[in-house]
Image (cartoon, rainbow, N blue to C red; front, side, top):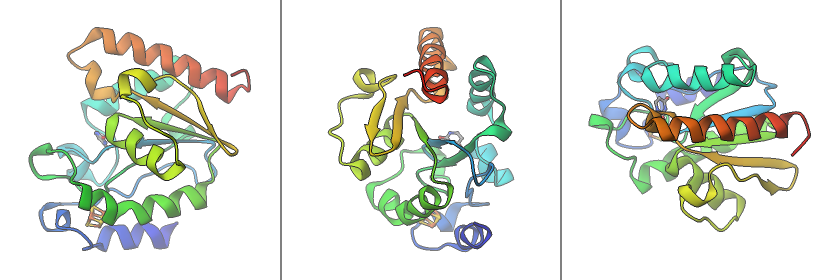
Length: 185
Ligand code: URA
Ligand code: SF4
């Protein structure tokens, strides 16, 4: 894992390497049962080299706390490890270039549950798992079983910043996550 993080920090496999300050490999216990996958680092994450440390991160912490989890209980990473300039969407080529790191993280951590945050992470995990993807509005909160893995797409926490309804939906979907962790769903 340390080797992987070093490779990410030095990576120049896609153009995002030119504009980043810090690559953000991800963090959490290497034996975490739950892996969260976001979209890409934002401004604060790029500055600090850590995932979800800005406003979306504060919401993620709140959602975790709502089901009795702390950040240290879970692994958190992103589909692309470097910040797209101006927080634009990651390009298909960038997602593809970065995908090998996520593959290795999935192998090393071997989580029981993967929670994708937002549309891009959902699409990337569905593609890799061979699951036919609906829209995030249709899929969020639904538990997909892929072999031994439970895959749960949810809205991106940043969606709740300006939309209280999304916050309620996220809270509901985190209760589903709690049930899956407890083996009841
Ligand atoms: N949004 C993301 O998708 N990832 C982060 O790490 C921070 C904000
Ligand atoms: Fe490398 Fe991924 Fe960063 Fe692109 S986004 S430079 S592939 S670590």
